[in-house]
Each structure stands twice: as structure tokens, then as C-alpha cells.
Length: 295
Image (cartoon, rainbow, N blue to C red):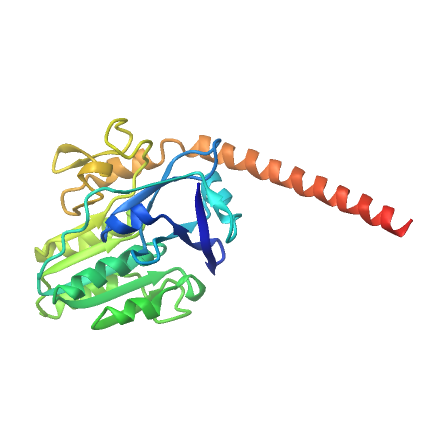
């Protein structure tokens, strides 16, 4: 069991957990991930490491409540525990002195972009960070990103904060400006990373993306996370999660990510029905206790 040391609500449905996992914290590097299982009935899901503290023996993850597992996780509080917390898994991000690097973080990917930008900054790179979300209340960790960046551009789809634009717009402007951009790193939803790669491709700028595909064991044995990169089959869990965005078969990746959509939807409906029944039963018990006390 792995204890939740701290928990914070970053935005509606967006949760931050600090988890006691000394062995993982000792080995963690930027870009790697963990596989968690909330309880004995839960599925195994990959979550990229957002931060870690080797001295405290803790690892920070950020989770968006989408499916059953992430909603289960979202109901936990400080002092609770998760059953499994396995890692660090995957290859760490390539970190060396490239020069001028643009780090693009979209949505929950902002949490993952932060340690990557930090590691690149430590290696002497000039960091331009672009972070974006649908609206202002989904922008988080801006202060952390600023602390490891030379320039920061914030965008929102609805214009409620920063620039009203997708993250690809300021990226394209940077590339068209003639400034030397030596590498672009994109972390976020697949559709965002796809269009970041399409934006940079005409300019010939190496673009690295972090693939978070469907996984089961996280060790390359099950093959569930297979993707096509440059016409070759790769496994996101052991060959990645970082890949050349210009070589990823995005249509295949997104098709595979949709393959269990109906099953996931039904599982979520059943879970929510069960939660509603539990809440109703809890209310009946509280009503009985209240009635007994009044009597």
C-alpha cells in the first residue's frame, strides 16, 4: 500500500496527489511514468510523474477524472492509500544541451511538461514554455513553469486568460519569426501533440511527443500500448513514452485509444450508479440515526 501524503484540487476534476513511494522517488527522472492500481478490483493505469522529492521519498502525480479508475482515485484523500504504485517505468526524456527549446504543455500535460523543462533548463537550454487549456480555471502550475522557463506564453481556447488561441498558434509565430528553435517538446492530448508536430514539420524542427497510450502491464509483455513510429511497431511503455512526433502514425494511435470507448462508458455508468446507491444508503442511515437521537 502506498500512502497519500497530500492531495490538492487543482481544478474541477483535476487532482494532484503526493504519494509516499521512496523507491520510486530515488530513481525517477523527467519523462518517466508509474502504473497505479487504486484497489484490488481496479485496472492498471499509467500516469506520468509530475514531480518527486528523493529526500522526502514522495512522488507527485496529477490525474484528470475521466474514467472509473481516475474517478476512484479522485475520491481519495490524504491519509488514504493506493494498492499499487509501480515505477519508474519507461525511458527518461532525452536531456542535453540543445540550445533554444520550446516546451508545449496542454491540459493535464502541463504537469508533465514542468519536470522536463526543469531538466532541460538545468542543462543550460533557453526554455520557452507554452501552456494552454480550454479556460482559465484549468490552467495550473503556471508559477512552477515560470520558475524553470526564460519565457512563458499562456493560451486558453475561450480567451478567459492569456491569449485566446490554441498552443499551436504562438508556436507557429515563433517558428515564422526566424528565431532559432532547436527542439520542440509537446506533452498533452494526442490531438494537440499531432498538430504541434504538423506545425513544426515544415520548419524541420525535431519534435518530441510523450505518448500515453492504453497499457496493461507497463513492461512490454502485453503489447497493448503498441504504436507505429516511422512504419515500425513500438511499445510506448518500454520504447517510450517519448517519440519523434513527425514519425508517429497519429490516426492509428487515436483509433486504438478509442477502441474500448463503449466499454469504458458503460463501466463509468455502472460505477456512478453504484456510487449513487451508496450515497442514498448513507443518507437513509443518517436519517435513521437522526430520528433515533430525537426520540
